[in-house]
Length: 331
Ligand SMILES: Cc1cc2nc3c(=O)[nH]c(=O)nc-3n(C[C@H](O)[C@H](O)[C@H](O)COP(=O)(O)O)c2cc1C
Image (cartoon, rainbow, N blue to C red; front, side, top):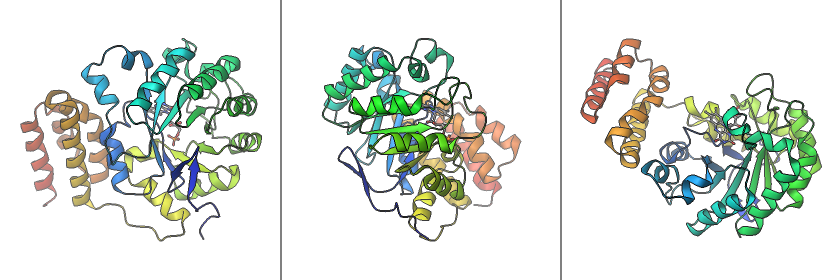
C-alpha cells in the first residue's frame, strides 16, 4: 500500500521528487558517494558533509575544493555549514549561493566533542537564542531556502519543540530532527514520539531521522512521526541503493533485487574512478580504502584478499587487486 505521503513535496519552493533524503555524513557524503547513491534513483534530496565556513572563505586547499565539489547530476543538494558566528555562517551561505547552491542547512545536531566544545553543532541546543540568531542571519543573507538539523535536546529530550518554533520564526524552511539527545550520541532507541512533538510544534516540513535500516522502519517513522520525509545515513554506506528501495516502497512499487556481484564490482569501479578524478591518484587511492571493507563484505571477498586490497598504494596495484577479485569470483 502506498503511504498517503507519496505525492511530490516542496521545501521552501524547491520541488523534491521523493521523501527519501540522504543524510549529511562527514567523511562519506562527498560528490563520488552522492553520485553513487543518486545513480539508483529515489533520492529526494541529499546533503553535503558539514563544511567549516572558515575553510571555504579563507583560501581553498585541494581538500576543501573537493569538499565543495558538485556536478549538474548532483541535485537537489543542501550544503551543510556549522559554527557559532552568525556573520561568518551568513557569509558562507552567500558563498554557496553565489556558486549556484539551491539549499543551505545549518548543523545544530553534531554530538562530537571537538565541535560541541566550541559551542557548535548540538551544543547550540543549549544556547537557543544564539541558535535562532544564526538561523535568522543565514536566512536573511540568501534567497535560497535554509534548513536546520537538530537533535531532541542536550541531556534530555526537552529542547527540540521550542527551539523548532524559534527556528521556524527565524525563517527556516524545514527542520531535520535526529530523534536522540546529544548525550545519547548514537546509543539507545530513536524517540519517534519526540520527533512527532516537533512535527506538531511547527508548520514547516520536518524530516525525521535516525535508525532507519529497513523498509518497515522507514514506514513506521513516517507513520508515527507525521514527518514530511525521512533522512537516512548509515545504512546507505553498506547499501547505497537503499533510498531507491525506500522511495519505491513508499510509492507502493514492488521491491527490486539488490545488485549482484558483477553490478557491485561495476559500482566499486565507478566510485573508485570518481575518487581518482576528484582527489587525484595518490589521495584518491588512499581515501578509497574507507570503502573497501564494505564492498568486500557485500561481495563475499575473502579477508586476505581484502587486506591485500587495503595495501594497494597506486592505481596499478589497485587494478591488480581488482583483477584478483574478478578472477576469484570467476567474472
Ligand atoms: C560517519 C558519520 C558522519 C556524520 N556526519 C554528519 C554531518 O557532517 N552533519 C550532520 O548533521 N550529521 C552527521 N551525521 C549524523 C547523520 O546525518 C544522521 O543524523 C545519523 O547518522 C542518524 O541517522 P542514521 O541512523 O540513518 O545513520 C553523521 C553520522 C555518521 C555516522
